[in-house]
Each structure stands twice: as structure tokens, then as C-alpha cells.
Length: 377
Image 1 (spheres, one colour):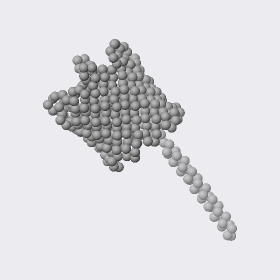
Image 2: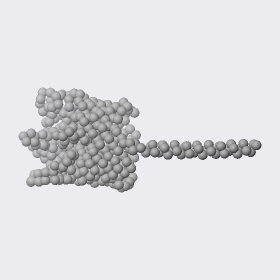
Image 3: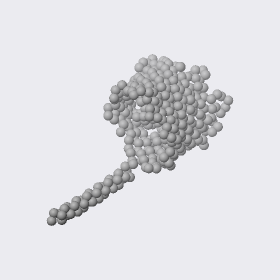
Image 4: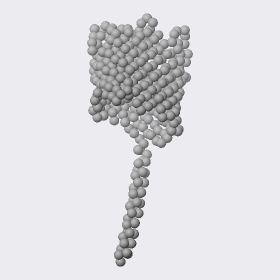
């Protein structure tokens, strides 16, 4: 009797175990299937930002500001709303980066006559683990700073960023050489012509990169005719972007660039060059203090734009059409959850008279204050 009960209990126990294992297996399979739903590969993120800007000892009516991109309006002003939609599959994916607002309008300035709100719009194919193709409109690979305020430490931007390229439309190929080294080559429309190519010219880009746990360095190039053939000579630009954690709380970034455009006649080539240092010190868990010190110069009128009777230049030039600026920007960055406040003091000093003071007289220096507010989601 006891033996029969033992066998019965044992059989019952085995059935319970088998049922439990089957249930666990079914649950695991169901969870795996649930984890693989198609919409799990989609992402939505972005930001909104605005700012306040005030000049010290100069007019505050939008007539006087550093001649750099963004954050140039007086008083309280809007930045941009940025929404980034993405899909990341095992082999293929896309990014649709949409912007709206003053900063967004400046970022896609060559499309000002359209309803363009596209900052980036591209698809990509991971051909292998070490080879990737990207086709469409993407932000430039040159330079230290970017269009989105979430990607920069300083709220206002540098001269090198403002007069380098913003975006490209074309085809690029990225190569992962090993765990540290990478390379990229690209063929693109003339710089910042993102909707179409109004000229029968193309430019070429290249990059060599090195990355490690404590920082990275990228050497970038672009070459090609940026305008109507026969009217504008080829442009060549070399750019170095690097940044390293030198200590637990201290970071140093460096950007250097050189650009030259050949003249189609007998005149000398024109262009610009510059260098900027970005030291940053983490004062507390939520507060970091950083400085951008930049020297930027144009030679042979490389930044002078002639539009009919109107002539514009970001800063004054001498009789040889040469001019330069030294800009120092001290920025604090304080995090409150997803909100970041960035108060900054900025001093721009040019080699020639450039800015208007309170009396309407030209002067070589301008000091200003900016408070930026950025919410990232």
C-alpha cells in the first residue's frame, strides 16, 4: 500500500514538473516573441531650447551681435524644437531629424524659400559589422560643434562652426578598421545644398578617426567645387577635432581648421583658418564649468560676401582684406533632470572695427551675456 502511494505521488510529481517546464518554456517563447515586436526598433527623441541675450556697452536692438550662428537675437528669443525619429534594424535603418524655430531656420538656411524643416534625413545599410553605407542628408562630419544645442557644451557657437559646413546630401561609406581606428569617404552635393544640386559639381569628403576609452581624434577633409563651374574655384578644407579626459574631472577639447578657395583668375586664393580650445571642469555632480577660447582669421577676403550692392563680412578687414577675431566664452552648465541651464559670458575682440557701441560708433570689442535653457527628451 505504501509503495503504491509512493509511485502515485512520484508520477504526480513528474507530471507537475513536466507541466511546469512546459509552462516556463511557453512563457519564455512568448516573451521572446513579444520582445521582437517590430515597433521596438523605433525611437523618438529630441529637444526644445530658448535663451536670453544682453550686450554690455553696446546696442540691444539686434543690430549688434557676434557674427556666429544662432543665439544672436536680443532679449528673450527662441531656439528650436527638434524631433528625431529613428528606426534601427539588424541591417538597415533610417533617421528623420526635424527642426522648427529660429535656430532650425538658420541650420537649413539654403532652403529658406521652401517649407524645409529637415535637419537630417537619411537611410543606412550595415553591409557588414565593419562596413556601413549612408544615403541622404546628414550633418557635417567636420568640426567640433554641432547644430543641436544638446551636442555642444557652450550655448552660443564658434566662428569655425559657423563658417564651416553645416550639412551634406550624398553617399558616405564608414569603415571600422579595428577597435580603435576608423575611416570614412563620401561624395556629396556642394555644401549645405541639401534638397538638390543646382550645380553640375560635387565635393568629396574623407575622415580618419581614432577613439579610445578616454577620448578620440578625427582628421577630416573636403575638396571640390562649391559653386557654378567656371565661376568658383575648388575649395579645400582640413579639420582636426579631438577631445580627451585628462583627469577624472577635467576634459580638454581642441578644434583646428584651414580652408582655401582657389580663384579662377589671377588673384590669390582666399579662405580662413582658426583654432579653439575647450577646457571643461566638473565642479559638482550637476554643475560643470567650461571655457571656449577661439582664434579665427580670414585672408584675402575669404569671408566677404557680395550680393549686388550689399557687402557683408563677419568682422572688419584691413586694406589687404585680412582680419581676425579672438573670442572667449565662459559657460556654466547646470542640470535639473532633463533640463539644462547654460549661463555664459562672451567677449569678442576683432583686429578691425566691427561692432557698434551705445553711441553708434564702431569698436573692436563686444561683451555679452547669454542664458540658454535646453530640455532634452
